[in-house]
Amino acid sequence: MIGKALESGWTTLRENGWRLFGVSLLYVGFALLALIAGWVIVGAIWAGSDPEAFSELISKIQSLESLEYESPEIPAPIEFSLQLLVNVLTSLFLGGFYAAFLAAVRGEPFGVGILFSRMGDFWKYLVAHFVVSLVFGLGLLFFVLPGIYLGVRLSFYPFAIADGNGVFDAPFTVSWLATQKRFWTVFGFYAALVGLGLLFPVGIGMMIFIGDFLPFLLPVIFLFAVLGGIAYFLYAVAATASLYTQLLEEKGILPARADSSPF
Figure 1: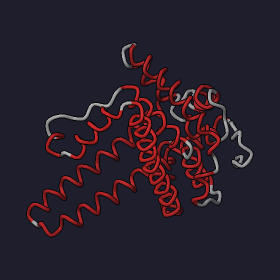
Figure 2: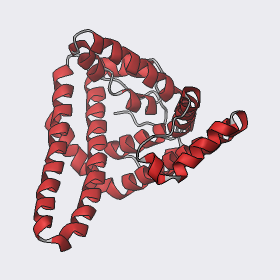
Figure 3: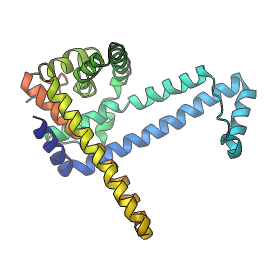
Figure 4: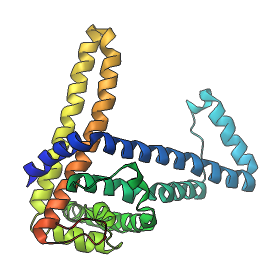
């Protein structure tokens, strides 16, 4: 099953790479806009409530010399509000992002517009991420191993939400049932992805070593590093979507959403 998922990741990337890249690029663009919007909105509120502190922050940002010695201090409530707002805005497109990879793996037609098809599920990602992180964190407190076990068993909840499952059904029903008696399979799959990922910086390091002797190759090395990093990210998500789909098929679990094809 691990080999099939890894192979399916390459096949999916080869057949749908440009469309998945378009969806991912659009998602990153919206994430950056969300960060900018968050700073603008929270900054406006902060400037209105405490203009003196806000002016001091702006002065520090404008002074590169001061930033070398002292980072600007942002009040905890402002920082929390900014993080919450950015998380809400980026979560609007998470469902469509994962739905694109599921559609690619399942051979369904899709375009970049799929990114907007699951916007109503944004709150599910916020709540599920908080709950799963809490459970995972509590597991880590108990000698680490329970945390790893729970993390693996609940790890498919982002895809399960994209499939239309509820905020608690996704991690504690779908992901849990899908990984039943398959813990070592899923753990081995993630280990394989990490292993493949480690090959990338090793290769880049070797190329940079060569670039020290052939400086004119450094721009090519930089371009290869960027493109290689993007390709690996797309491949990892596609392979994970493939494993998730295989586990659902094995357990006879059908997608909850009507526009997700059954097996």
